[in-house]
Image 1 (cartoon, one colour):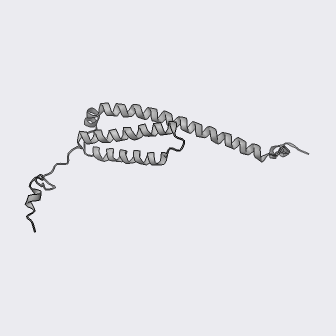
Image 2 (image 1 turned 30 degrees about the vertical axis):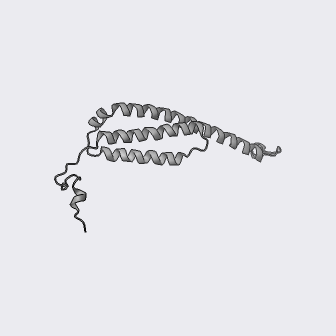
Image 3 (image 1 turned 180 degrees about the vertical axis):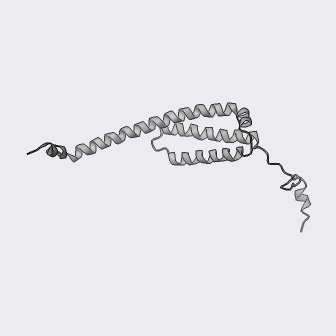
Length: 141
């Protein structure tokens, strides 16, 4: 067997759990997570606006996963410190979320309109031009 010291010489020294402080997540790590959230929100906004077969379920799963990562990365840190360090990224994210919300609302409105048109078409198809159930209720003999 070879001596394991040749493989571990360049590794940092190990610390015990009691020696290692629990640091607030690195700002670069938080910035990367915020960036991933921005990307998925932009992708979703573009997909909703241009692709009728866009997979909203998969997009929501990605957003949920990234928000979970962000929550875990912030654990043990100061919210004020986080806001101060990432103000610019959070402002960009807020703007992208506002555009995303507008796209989602427009999409829902379009879906509601299509559902209303289908409901009306079904109701017209069910009537054959003779009597409707409502007319029977109006006749009193």
